[in-house]
Length: 265
Image (cartoon, helix red, strand yellow):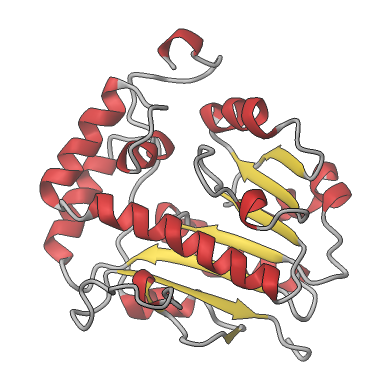
């Protein structure tokens, strides 16, 4: 990757998308990203497992939405392309990947840009109105029909000052009945001290890590009807038959869920 550094990419600053890529075992990262990720892993060694559990959760939820008839997806804070991207889990669906990271945009367009059902859009989740009105989003997504909106491991990079509840309310108002919201978010209930230490690592990265409790995360689903099993730790959301679920019963550590917009919502 170092031989093809996109314009505007700051390789000396740890980048949250590239750190996540490193946790997943990817190669689209630089020394600063790896050093910061390793500091975080020293504090919480399970972060690598958490990243993989989050990716698996994305796959299961997108598969569930596709089986439920959703054929258009808006993936906000999509991150770097890896295995089992949304358009691969839901082949034939229209997918818009949105991110504001130059690395993500360049690699996304290079890897995914030739797929006629895929659109790559520059946008910031903190400004959802701009995303919803973006002409490329409007060309790809029919908001008069049910849509799947994905906020997977992105809201824990949105500070309270940017009004995360307001962001999701804006998205919800644009979603037709039958639309689904998929959201995952790290919870600090089990290891609050460690979470604060990890936040200090991310203070020097491209986006802050925002510590929230399980109760605070549940509020992000206000206005949605929850799909069973509700808001649970990621491995507990509809695991494949025979899958061992780790850390069951220890409390909230990485929560996720799927909400539905009802006819009255």
